[in-house]
Image 1: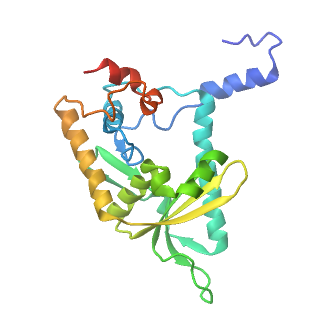
Image 2: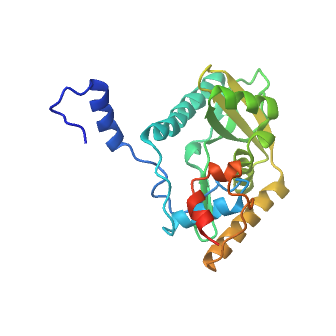
Image 3: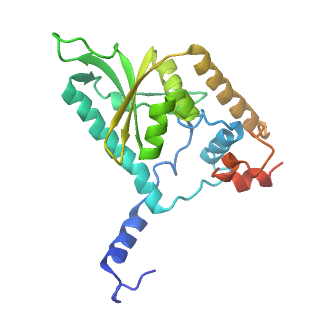
Length: 242
């Protein structure tokens, strides 16, 4: 606790007040989100479901990291407006569209659905309708995405788009990423691949059934020093379990 009667730096005093008022949007999530299912470790996905059920605790991120997460929401709003200004039309309330399945244990909410084009005298660069998903990335990650393309860059983001397209009956996704450091913008059209979506839903089913039965699904590795495990929010819980 800071002593507000001291000569503490103004920055420290105000940031303290900001930090105690900052909370994570995911702390009260009661379902497994589509943004998690594509993770390469199935047990990591299971732990997110268990956290949603209150069976394990979620990691408490530093407030600075929560502000980085929130930055993504701000950039998403601006990116949507950039596309609107360019002539793309979003379905009314499309940023609220989503789905629930498996008795509401699995759910997701899309960034938007592009449904139209304002310029009848010009060809729309994207076949419509299209799911729209946006990510805000640092320069290093953005460059890797540009080089590797989405499927190779992030199985998590890729599977998220496949799940959304599956439930919303869409055949393509306009994936957009903004470079937070340079403000460059990346665009990629991701086609709907039914087998990939169904594979992801199979994972969801296995995770839910195993959790209901009190069983743990396999880890992605048996080496606790593996880089994925070292960065996992649930590493201590996982390696303390059987």
